[in-house]
Amino acid sequence: MQPFDRFAPRERTEPPQTNRPDPSVVPGPSNHTSMPTQSGALLSRGVSIKGSVKFLNKLLIDGKVEGTIESTGTLMIGEHACIRGEIRTKSVDVRGMVEGDIFVTERCELHAGCRLRGDIEAPRLVVNENVTFCGSARIGTGKSLPA
Image 1: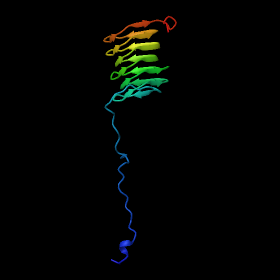
Image 2: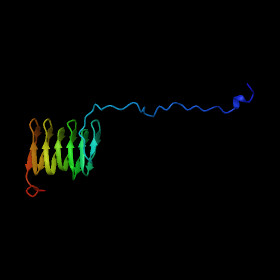
Image 3: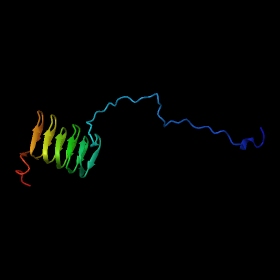
Image 4: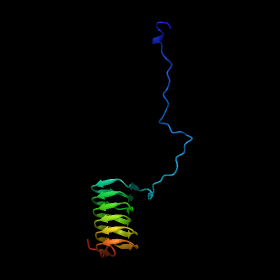
């Protein structure tokens, strides 16, 4: 070994890339299920919000919300959802639990297995079998419902 060989530049070896996916591995189907929303948003199971929620078009909530929900769009409350607060939307489909009043300008549907403790004010109300509803409902056209 020559005296200056130890200072000579060494050939550089790249460490193996571990962040790159193996092209031979194709991901399989997911085990979780969710209700897809077209051009809408999703607040998934395990997410919790304390405060007001506002959205424009469509929103699926399958998590927890404590506060008011306001929209000119459609709200879908998933079977794992827990809502504590007032809801004011164009329409709502309830599959989970709601503790609070619901005010809609078009339609409210309570699906099998949902639990609602609060009042409903809506032009149209659909109540399916196996619904728990503790409250009152005022149904009619927007003109007949006092502000």
